Length: 103
Image 1: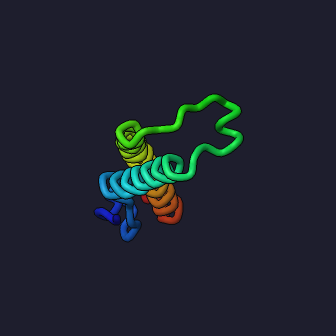
Image 2: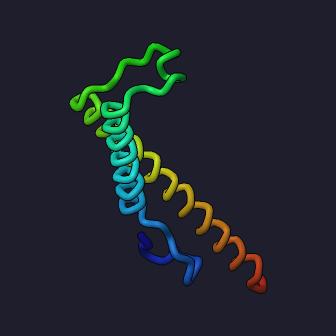
């Protein structure tokens, strides 16, 4: 999950966007697929029946799980990128603020 060090931040660790994206995507895939199997086996909840949602089939559940995999990957990828940007900027600013200025 952890990648290279920040260029100017020294020992600051960054999240690897690919690893984090794959991890979030796989968790999302299994959550949606298990939920689909649960609904197929035990039926819709009363709230979902009120919304006139159709009971998923195995194939539609798998398609929704694949979509969750893609969306989870993209979400995790961009969260890791934003995290890396914020951590490196904070570390670089802290390092430049702590260092005495040379003229």
